[in-house]
Amino acid sequence: MKKLLVSGILLLILGMSNGFAQGINFQHISLEEALDKAEKENKLVFIDFYTTWCAPCKSLAKFVFPLKEVGDLYNKEFISIKLDAEREGAPAARKYNVSSYPTLLFLNSKGTAVYKDTGSLPTDAFIELGRKAVASVSSEYSLVKLKEEYPKRQNDEHFLKIYFNKMRDYGQSPSEGIEAWLKVQTEIEEDDVDMMEFLLENKNDLVAEGKAEEIINANFDEYMDIATRFEERRLERLKLSLVSKTLEKARQTRDPRMMQIFLEKWKALPGNDKRKSDLMAFEMEYLRMTGDKGEFSDLAQQYMEDIIAKNAPEQVKENDHKKYLAFKKDFEANPSRMGKFKLGKYEKGIDTYYLLKVINVNARTYMRFLGETKKNYKVVEDWIDYGYDLVSESNYMMDNLKSDLLSKIGKEKQALELKQLAFDHWPETDKSRSAVKRQLDQMKKSLSI
Image (cartoon, rainbow, N blue to C red; front, top):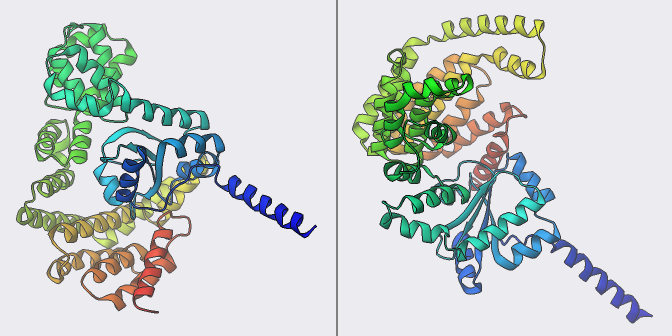
């Protein structure tokens, strides 16, 4: 009887273990260890890039990853790991251009991306994604093979069309392939309605200073003549789209030449001569890409001096109050859930919040790019003081910023006090609050408090 009881307990424990192991077995190892293991086991690496605040990430983790049918495929074919893109996974996220969450990335054992998708997927689609990732490796048109062939087949319009379509399938940017295909294609006349439709369909992947822009400029009037009213509106936005996508491309690739092209095109847009602050911000980005620290320092200081000079704290507060009253009047006439949310923003000061964000971003960028030294801290300290002039009490954003920067220059105790203040006043509904709490706990641990 006793043996039967023990056997029953063992079977129950084993059954529970199997139940817990049914889904994806995410291994608690580094990316490098996962790549080594994948090579030994002849598998791919699957990475779930997530953040703590990402709702679709939590949905996948709760409803899809634990399922047996998902685990059956993923445990067989992949070494699976999870990486927080804002913490330990940040270097890998930068390397693989991860910018939305969740990003579902598949690598071969050499660390080369073979397949990629983003967003939460239903179970069937997620399983199909895994199958596609496996199939892509042995395919004639695998991502690795396509990238190997691409430089050698710049005059092959058939290959180039396959290339840019497959890049999109694999979650890669098709921009370069589209440009290459447009240069050599003989399939569509450039002034034809089919070309207009192709350009509109692919507008999110077109950048300035290339064949696409050349075709648009040469045939714009013709396209407007043959377009429907809806297409006319899309065509009117197409040139602006080219400029904005060029900026995206420059930021993704950290390419100074691409950033310079964007700057030239942006300056030529109507009305931008009045937006000096925007121009200076873009020029600072360009200087960071080129590594010109001297020019960047001068321009960054001029930029912040201009911001502060044009936005006296009392005037900002007065403007904020006027905007709040105007928005409140509109909200009371047409109440809505979104309106109620925005009303809270206006009540706290919409311009004030914007200026605090500007200080936060520029101070961190200045210190990170030029060096986390006491000399550089003295420069940004004036900006932070201006932030306190805007909001003298419960200024959690400036407290948090000052805490982080003081910590960088070795003033740990003062940094801890400010971090505690920041956390105490941080809005409970703000997604960043949990990250601030982790930082606070780590600082206390480091100082043994």
